[in-house]
Image: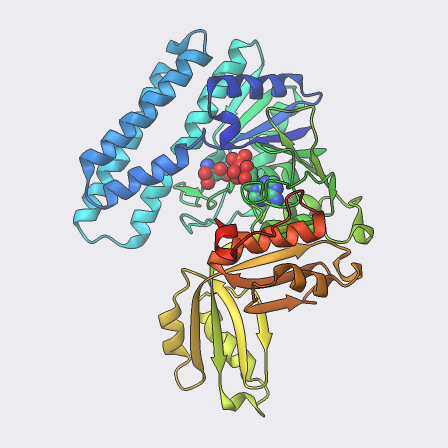
Length: 467
Ligand code: ADP
Ligand code: ASP
Ligand code: MG
């Protein structure tokens, strides 16, 4: 069997839903279909939660009305008998309105943050629930044997609402109970990505973009033959096409290259996607829903490896650089361990690190609790904070064997001055920290150098280039 995951843009209109159904029906093996929410739905639901959280009940309800009315237009264009979904669709809307009332009420009292996060998860999960309702009914109308499976019966997580951690043991067991037998009988299963359930049954979500991760977890549990990520680009490209117009599709990547690219900002794959499937030796392909016969990327151990050099570029921001200085670093062994322990206690992940004689610089997410960290490090180190930075990374298994790679990258970046350079942490990642305003220009310059843009950026100012 295979797992086919379709992202939001692949489900945005009735015509795209029809195309998705066509791909599902034409699949040579019975698929487990994992859906994201349609188009911009998740963003709209977050906006609903925000309006409700700010106490603007009427605004929130108006936003709900807009979302459900525009979805109704898709239903009317997609289904021959739209009335079949009228009742469950109205029920989903009533659920959302009830949750909105709950959030608005909570906002007027001071309820614990955890409760708000829990209600928000229940609310935003409706995007995926709407999508599965529509596609299931459409497949039924096409005469397919199809079963909708509520992800909350399978995707068991902890109760870290908004960023829940999947419980792989429980997922394995539930998948064998609730999905495997149906696929074995040739019944197409349609389920929600991104959505899960805490041990107490309450709805959780895996974090933005998390439906790739759901699909990978299910594919690993089902020991699928292939995980297909269907999206709006012809696979993983040499850079984000929204920034580098000349970015080219990549035919093959190793799992390590793909994981590194995702972690360093290539949004086409959620950073946790690769691990569950690679553990089982299952290949991943990334494909364009509207161009199914076009190019695509295959991610597996056969990836082209060191011979290629740099496989692709990625960038991520904003991030913050912290430079910690202390004379005590001079002769104190174990000093770094004590310094970084403070990060661990505040649950602040560190990305890049460089050290000098009496200082160490590292990068953290822009929303890290930096004031708390500074307080915790009081007396241990002086902390200098540089906000509005970005990481630009070149990734490839053969990076270290690329001739004069560091020299070429620095020359290409000039006059952009990197604030930090990280090379050698592993053999496949060369990262630069630049100012946020230089992020796009840096990416374009490196792309021109290593992949030869037609329009090399000889342009005017770096600032202009970055726009
Ligand atoms: P989906 O809704 O299908 O999950 P996403 O928007 O999450 O789609 O991911 C696809 C988008 O990722 C592309 O449209 C592209 O803008 C962006 N992207 C960023 N980096 C890359 C890259 N290296 N290759 C391909 N797409 C990329
Ligand atoms: N719909 C969710 C989001 O927008 C999950 C996903 O698209 O993967 O983040
Ligand atoms: Mg995505």
